[in-house]
Length: 202
Image 1 (tube, helix red, strand yellow):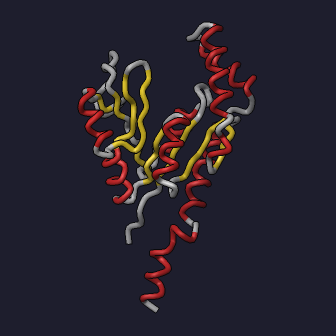
Image 2 (cartoon, rainbow, N blue to C red):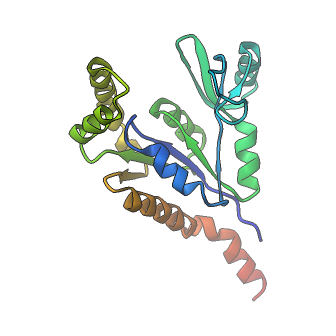
């Protein structure tokens, strides 16, 4: 019997290595990465359906009006959000669906999908986060300080999540992520169908 997949909501401040962790997790075909939708224009090298689902403003607003978005927000005049249908389709197919979203969106989903698993990826310290951002060498000191300030704000919401994974060492963080998902599958409410099947065949 095919079991339903797990909805996994992942948030982390910029520079925490979230993308690197998820790249390792997504090597397994039991996971599906949910591609967000946006009304902004594609940037050079971006592909529709891979980087984002690029929608017109009226398309996006129509989805909002018809409860077609699990979560959404506006940034700099553009909409960003998670289309509902594809997420639930993949869950019904038994895939574990990963939503990589900001804290604001995660809190919206928490109200709509209380059964989802919420994982916050944190740096070992704010100082280490600042060091990693500097190491990138792609942003000014002013932007780095702004990102660190935003990170501190996001980290203050970590207690709203079910699990906190500290990304000090990549291998350990990846293993911790896998452990969380494995333990979630073993929870009694996730095994109800299996128990019913055992009792029906007793």
